[in-house]
Length: 237
Length: 237
DNA sequence: GTCTATAGCAGGATAGAC
DNA sequence: GTCTATCCTGCTATAGAC
Image 1 (cartoon, rainbow over the protein chains, first blue to last red):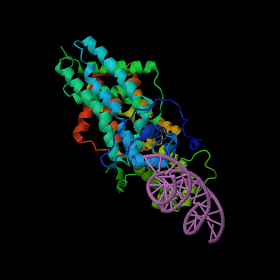
Image 2 (image 1 turned 45 degrees about the vertical axis):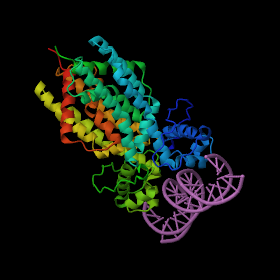
Image 3 (image 1 turned 30 degrees about the vertical axis):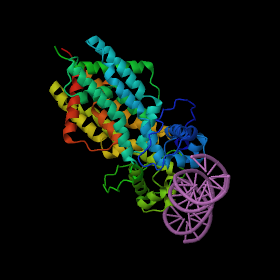
Image 4 (image 1 turned 90 degrees about the horizontal axis):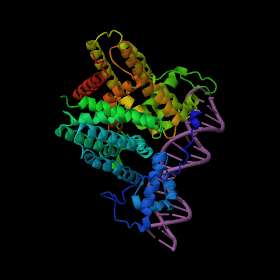
């Protein structure tokens, strides 16, 4: 029963992650003109297939076919399968960078407890929504799958993704301390508290058993996480 | 550089997870005598190799060779590679079951705040230590790696492992509420708070970048998680 | 730079003797 | 039930023509 599990259905959602157009490595050899967006098409197709099927289960022939080019073109553009994979995984971290870059601004107009409460709730909601995106979960699974074989890639992904967001959250909490809106002695720990009170359970379950979170559960999780963080780090009078 | 990553060194630690001797499925065909512990030897070798290299990267020939039997014996004993894999993954959840089964007892002699504090800290320390074991982390990575292809297996693992422990923690918090040692309206949520305040960051990082936690970090994490949980769920006078 | 065709190899699973 | 030898599929990567 469990042994005859077939591949997942080809889910025709057009929700592909954007990848940077040309994040070429240092030693890619002679520059290749991207004649007519072929390179981007290959990257798009490979992203889709890797996320849905994993690295090993995706053949270069599948990628070439999905991108409507020949196998040889894939090799001409990316060298080999590993390079293509690395470029895609690291190119996709743009999402995390954008999220982290926006964080400082979210607390800008906040000058009192009521506004802080609202701003934190809004932030938590966005954070949870982004992380629980099927694409983000799939990318996490994909990188974890290859973590044993490509430890540097997994470490680089962690640095540019989760760790970067946590660091930005730490800066945010440090700022709230400076502005005396909260009392935060260890901003890094406060950031982790916030992040994992909010994401921990959903993310853990999402790695094993993908499911869409009901709105009620999202609301309850967001509210509870913010409540606990505010109570823990409130400035006692 | 990143492309030429070799397999990890063959780390000769004898720390193999125990697997149940004969958790045979329903339709394994005619019973096979395990002549001289061959079956167990194969399971042991396969567990070691799967955890270190992953499912795809481990060939049946490697398994047979490591178990000092022929490939055909592997097929005679387990049918095919997937069956062998499933049996190992689900057999290993004994660790989680044992941990969950012990939980109710840990709060048995507790009758006051000071004892509660100490008991929670001891429990947190054990919990963190168990989950951050290299074997447990490797098993998580292994199951996540195959989650797309074997969703039922990943779901079953989650049920028997992480979910079972969370449920047992929920029962524990419910008991603390009943005994008026804490005020816990939603025991399941309290359990998740405790678990992910404690494990969240280390577990998340551990999926991507394995590293041993320094003692100081363990202590700080345990103390902080217990502090936050006790403050959040304390019974207000 | 792009295509078609193919080399070269590894891995899962099986046949047939004992 | 166990072993040795083998089949066959599918994959990465390359050769050679245009």
